[in-house]
Amino acid sequence: MTDGAGLPGIAGDASGQHGAPAGGAPHDMPSALQLLDAVREFLETEVIAASEGRVRFHVRVAANVVARELALGPAQAVAHAARLARLGVADEAELAAAIRSGALDDRLDEVRAAVRATVADKLAVANPRYLEHDAGPGAR
Figure 1 (cartoon, rainbow, N blue to C red):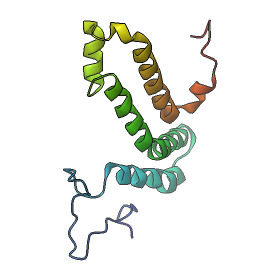
Figure 2: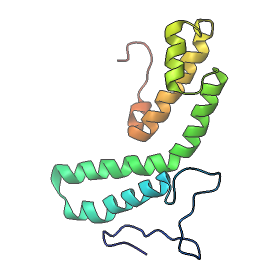
Figure 3: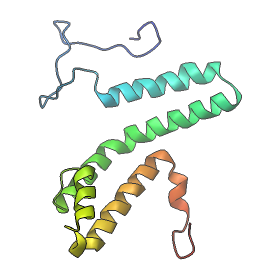
């Protein structure tokens, strides 16, 4: 089922209502991941077909990023939360504050590993080719 823009429709329950996802999340269906999937499908089917040249290239890049976010994002979010929890912080803002204050100076190896893993996760979505290069001495 699609809407007038060619995007997948949103199926409600038998009453036609769109309830909140399990777990009491504050947003109704579709979820952010479902919306991203709909955007990816729209880009791949409608926009690419109507585009050429540079615009077509950028649409393909965007569709690929969305596809990687859908595939990798949930597991990356779990791993990221676990890394932050191991450092005793709730989010990146709290991590940055702890680094600035020196609260984690005695755990710099752990902090570096967590930040590197987070950057690697971001690159895996944004442009995985950047991960293929050797980051050894002399790398930029």
